[in-house]
Image (tube, rainbow, N blue to C red):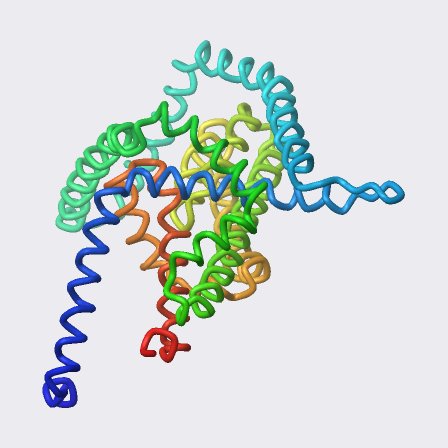
Length: 356
C-alpha cells in the first residue's frame, strides 16, 4: 500500500484517468444493458448452432463444398425441424400427462398431504420443542422470502428483455454471428488502438472458446438430465415421468441451483406415488450423485478446466442476474461471470499489453 502512495504525480494522474474511464464504462454498459443482453442471447444461440454449421461445412462432393451461408441456413432449418418434431412427438404424451394430473389432482394432493403429515409427525415427536419453534420460525421466514423473490422474477424477466421485439432479434443476430464471424471480428478489432490489437484479439479468441465450451457443456448436461431422470422414473413406474424429465432437463441449464429446482418435484412425485418413502429417499440420493458426477467429472472434461468458478460465486451471479433480468438473467449470469474472470486473468498474465 505504501508503494501506491509514493508514486509520482504522473502515475497518480494515470490511475485517476483509468478510474474515471472505468466508472464511465460501467455507467455506459448499464445504460445499454438491455441491448447487451439481446446481443449475448444471439451469441449463445450461435454457439448452440455452431457445431452443426461446422459439420455441414465439412461436406465435400467432388470439388464442391458447402459454404458458410448455406451451412448456416441448413443448420437453422434442421434445428427448427428438430424442435418442431420434438414438440409434435412429445405434445400428445405431455398433454395426456397434464390431463391425468388435472383429473387426479385431488387424489395426488391427498397422498402428498398424507406424506407431509407423516413427516411432520416424525419431526414433532423426535425433536425438542424449543428446537422445533426455532426451526418453524426460520422455515416460515425463509418461505416468505422465497415466495417474494419468486414473485419478482417474472416481472423482472418481462421488464428486462422487452420480451417481444428483442427476442425476434436474437435469431437474426445469431445468423450474422455464424455467417460473418470473421468479418465481424476484424471490424471489432479495428476500433481498438493498434498497439493493443494483438492482446485484444487473443482475449477475444479465448473468451469465444470459453463461451462455446460453456454452452456446449450445458446442452450436454441438460440432455443427460432429461434422459436419466425420464428413464429412472419410467423404470419406477412413476406417472408424469416424461413431464418431470423435461422439467429436469430444462432446469439443469441453471448452474448449481438448477438440479435442486428440478429435483424437488421429482422427489415429491416419487414420495406421493411410491408405496414406500424409502424410494423417494433413494431417488433423492441418486439425483445428488448425478449432480456430483456432472460437477466433478463431466463439466471439467467438457470445459477443459477453464471455468474456475466457485459455487458461491455462481450462486451470487445467479441471484444478481435474476434480480435484474429475471429468468433470462439466471441463464446468462454464469457465462458473463466466466467471461469477466477470463478477461481479468488474461490482463494479469499480459499486463504489458495495456501498459505500453
